[in-house]
Image 1 (cartoon, one colour):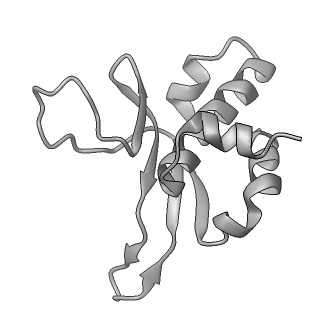
Image 2 (cartoon, helix red, strand yellow):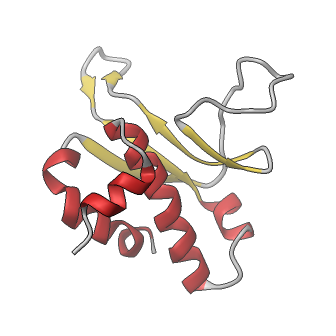
Length: 117
């Protein structure tokens, strides 16, 4: 389902996304820097305080080897917010649009509008 939701974005923005990976984790393991804060940073897509996805910037791994930036989707929270498979694909697409827009530094509306047929 992730690949189905990803396909239209990847087709339109392929050249800009070559240094971006996708990953799926079961649940989020994000430490919020301020536990009293009610908002997450821009690289986290959340719903009612629960992270649905996070953009992890490129960096270095434990062996000091370079890593690509990646979008991590959180399966359980996404499934809990979907009625069925079609709804889940739509939600995944919406979350991916937000994350890719954050990665590219553009507004989500621009991401879809610029790639419109």
